[in-house]
Length: 314
Image (tube, rainbow, N blue to C red; front, side, top):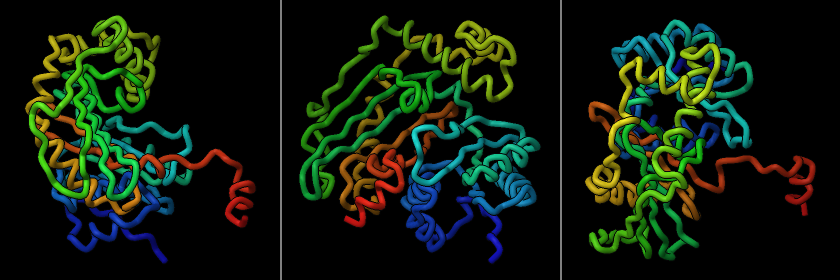
């Protein structure tokens, strides 16, 4: 059976979104479809599955650039239940480069998500949202970890940068809606050893070694000072301005609580223990959600397959 040609996420109807939101083969795409079906903001995107060829990648890129009015696209990839090491996407490339880059990932057996571009150097706010509960019907907690202008989601999820501000709620009932009072939020500030300068240096180091090198912006040495110089030359100075993260997060506490409650209720795995999503306020401003991660299903087990099969048989 021929693989269907990709269609933009925002062109899918309710039935198609519901079907994609139940398909666990590609968790990133699955949750993007779920977010879209819940009318939460998410990037417009196309899914390329293994079996799609260069022609399909070219057509998907052409369709998405036409739909979004842009000549660049972001590449993400989806390998199903991931191993600890996998392609770290999220970088943006000219549309003409997309087919070749996508085909290489498809040949490795990975799905490819082409998405409308964002500028990861000019974000206003980045928040990692974590929902925890011990079991169905029991109360849990909600934690928001935030970084301000010039940072991005990968700094919290991959770069292991400590947040500038953390907001926490205890005793949250994710099955019965009850909005928290303002005084129930526990808000704490910067806990980074060395303060903002140390955090900024770690951000620049990661940008140099990963983002700017992968995007072809740095072709020689890749140290923090080279990333800083490149950002300054491009006029991306958000990272070097005063950080008003506490105020930016406080304005969105109610909305983030509301959305977290909706996502917890809509999670297909009703036996979830830990859910996480990432929220960005882009320059513009425009806000988006990225994915919804079930902590128990993100990574493949490291136990050898033969051992796992034996354990299942037992």
